[in-house]
Length: 106
Image (cartoon, rainbow, N blue to C red; front, side):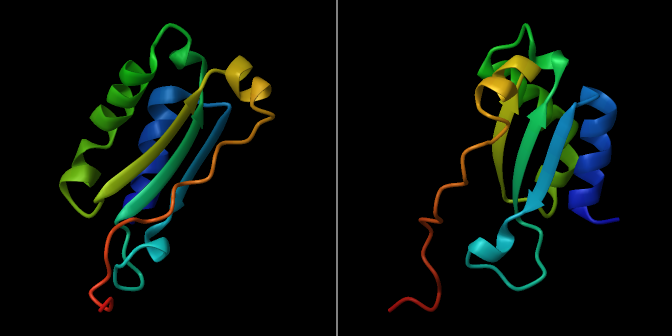
């Protein structure tokens, strides 16, 4: 099973989200084609209601520890309560541009 699919299953089970996106953004970075190393997660869940941003991220990191210890190099997390999601017009910010160097750069 791919790391992306594994993360999706784990977060659906743990968060019971009203909206979840698990996106492989590895192609935006200096990695070999087909890799799953950079992942963007947009999660909307009632489980975030009483949690600050750090606690929300810790919850997700705890669930995807196996993938982080393996193929995943970086996560971009966007976590919202249902109300926050509506207030954001049901749209998360784009991931920042990759600032890492490429082995092809001179």
